[in-house]
Each structure stands twice: as C-alpha cells, then as structure tokens.
Amino acid sequence: MKKRALIILIVAALAVSELFLLFSNNQLKREVAIKDRYLDQIVDGYDAAETQFSASVADAGKIIDGNIVAKDSADNTITLSEVAKQSIGNILICRYSDFMCRECVKHNISIFMDNKDSLDMKRILFLPRSESRRALKLNFDEYGLQGCRVLNCPCFSIDAEETKFPYIMVVDNDLRILNVYFPTKSTHGTDYDYKHVKMIYDKMIKR
Image (cartoon, rainbow, N blue to C red):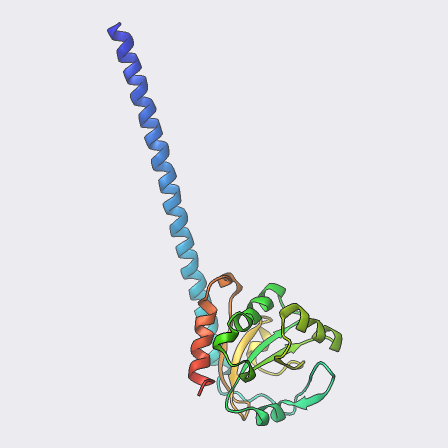
C-alpha cells in the first residue's frame, strides 16, 4: 500500500513538474516574441532614419526646375514656378506615383488625410505622377482628395525620385528643397510618421 502511494506521489510530482516546465516554456516564448517585436521596431526605426538622412543629404539645397508643367484634374496647366509664386511661404509636398507600391502610397497620403484637424490642408500640395487625366481623377475617389490641391506632375531630377517610393518634402518659393522625408508603411497604424511630419510642418510650414 505504501509502495503504491509512493508511486502515485512520484507520478503526481512528475506531472506537476511537467506542467511547470510547459508553463515556463510558454512564458519564455511570449517574452521572446515581445523582444523580437521590440527589436523589429528598432530595426525599422533605424532603417527609416538612415533613409531620411541619406535623402536629406542627397537633395537638400537642390532647386527643382520651375519650368516643369503640371496639370490639374481639368487638364489646366501650370508651371511649378507659378505654383510656388502663388503659395504663401514654404510648401509641404506629398509626392507619389501610380507606379509605386499602392500600400506605400496609401500610407503616405493617410498621414495627411487622417490628421486634417491639425494641419492646414491649403499649405499642402499633393503632387502625384499619374499616367493619365483619368488616373488622376481616380486618385480623388480612392484617397479622398476632394478639396485638396492636387497636380499631376512628371518626374523631376532629384535623388528622391529614383527611390521609387512615395515621399514628403518641403520647398521654398524658389523651389529649393529644404527637407525630404520618407514615410515607411511598416509603421502604419501608429503615429510614428505623423509625429515626424507634424514636427516638419510646425518648424517649416506653420509660421
């Protein structure tokens, strides 16, 4: 009888030990997953910061050709120099193309459209590169750009255009580039990019 009780006690102890090991293993997996997510965020932030620094160094101070002709949704033409002259102070430009990653474009535009209450949309110029007037009009419906300043503009000669990713930049009335910023879609659903753009807006646009 004592032997049987001892066996039962040993089996019970082994079962409890096994349960404890399983619990500890699950806890360890959760901790590792949390650390992995944290490290991924750090890596994403580092990659984004490296891109920002490289882009700013490459294009800051360059002057965009003011003779480049842009078109609105009614096919009216205007040169970029005329756009700059009509603007009050620096211009915050949201640049994207129909040929770029769709999710990246949506994220880029959402930074502005999701935060209309804290931004003066009249100071922001959406400058897509669309393949046609029809494609430009589809932008209005897909991205909710009704009432915004939107001009279809061909490619211009700066390094940011070569990345094939949407970006945001600030130019002055001489079309001199003051700042270039590349949002990253990996931060979508957070305010990471908005905080950066808002800081640029407050320092260079809102005066």
